[in-house]
Image (cartoon, rainbow, N blue to C red):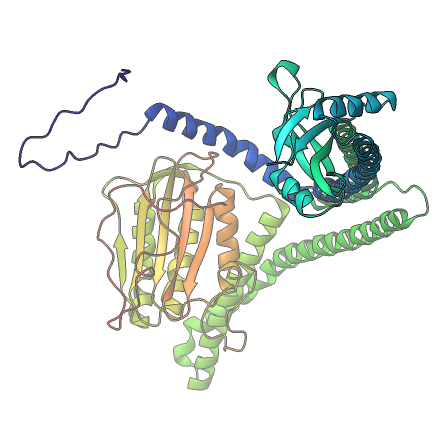
Length: 579
C-alpha cells in the first residue's frame, strides 16, 4: 500500500460551519510583477514617443510588419504546394509499386495454391530486394480465412500500422486501395514511428480470397525534404525582411532628411537666426522644396526687418514727439491754470470752457506721461529701484487714494490681507502704479459692485489680486487686455477709462520685477487680475500663492450676488502657473 505525505486539516467541531478560505497573495510574485511593470513602463513610453515623432520609424516598422505578413502567407502557400507535390509523387510511386507486387504475388499464388504464407512473404521480400526497393517499403501479409489475422510482417514493422478501415475496405472491394497512416515498428528494431502510406489489396486464388497484402511506404525522406524546404523558406524570408527593412530605411532617409533639416532650420529662424538656409543639391522635388523654403525664409527675413525698422522708427517718433510736446504743454498748462483760477469772473460759457480745457489738459498730460514710460520700456532704459517693501502698505495706500472714485461709482473697496507681512524686494513706485491701475479699472468696470483686494505670500513669491463682479471678460479677452490701446468695446464712447496704456505699462512693470501679471474673467461674473512678484529680486517663481481663477467662480452661480471671501489668508496655496 502506498501513502502520500502531506498536511491534514483538523476536523471541525460538531455544529461548526466549514472553515473560511484564507486567500494569501504571493507577495514575492506580486512585487516582482510590479517591478517588471515599472521597468517596462519607461521603455514602452520611449518607444511610443519615438513612434509618434519619427515618420521614418513608422515607415520602416510598417514595411517590416507587412513584409512579415506577406512572406508568411507566401511561405505557407509555397510549403503547402511542395508538400502536396511530394505527397502526390510518393503516392503514385507507392501505388504503382504495390500494384506490381500484388500482381507478382497473385501469380505465385495461382501457380501453387497450397503455398504457405511464410514462403510467400519470403519470396515477396526477396523480390522487393531484387528490385532494389526493400529500403523504401515493408510488407505485411494477412490471412483472411477463417478470419483476418496477421501472418507476417517484414522489416520489423508493426502489423497494427495497417488501418482497420483500410482492411475492411480491401475485404469488400477487390481493388488496390491506399490510406495515410502512422507506421510503427517493433521495439527491437529501434526505429521511431513515422508517417507513411499503406497500399494493399486482396490475393485471390481460384475465386477464393486467402490473403491481404499491404505495402507500407514510410514518408521520412519526404518529411526531411519538407523540413529542409521550411528551413530554407524561413531563412530566405528573414533575410528578405531584413533587406526590405534596410531598403525602406535608406529610401525614407533620403526623403526624411531634408524634411528634418527644414524643421531644424525653421526652429532656428523662429529663434531669431534669420540667416539660416537649407542646402540645395540636385534638381528633384526635394531640391525644389529646399529652394522654395529658402525663398520663403528670405522673404520673411525681409518682411521682419522692414517691420523692425518701422517699429524702431515708430518708437523713436513717439519718444521724440513725447519729449518735444512737454515744452509747449507746460506753456499751455500755465495759461490754462491762470484761466481756471479766474473762471469765477468769466461768463458761465467761458468758465465751462476753462474747466473743459483743464480736464483735457490733464488727460493729455497723462497720455504723454504714459507714452514716455512706454518709450523707456521699448528702449530698454527702464530701471528697477528695488528695496524690501511690505505690499500691504502699498495696497492700503492705493485703496485710500481710490476711495473717492469708488464712492462716486457706488462701489465698496475691501482689503483681505494675511496676518504675516508680505515683504518683497520691489520698486515701490512701480508696484503702486500697477495696483492703482488695477483698482481703478476694477472700479470703472465693476458696475457699482464690491471690489476685493487680497494679498497672499509663500516661500518664493508675493501676490496681489483685484477682484470685481462687473461685466467680466469674453473668452479670449484675458490675453488682449494687456495690448496697447486695446478696448473691450471699441464702439463705446470714451467717457470712461484712461489712455489705454495703463495695463500695458503694468505688464512691463511686472516683467521688470521678474513676475507675472495675469487676468481672468467670465462674461457676467466679473474679472480678476493677479500680480505675482518674487520675494527676492532676480529669483524665479513657478507658483503663485493666489489661484488665478477665484474660488467663488468655481462654484455654481447664485442669484443673490457674489459670495464673500474669507477675511484672512494664513497660509500659502494656489495653483502652479507657467509664466
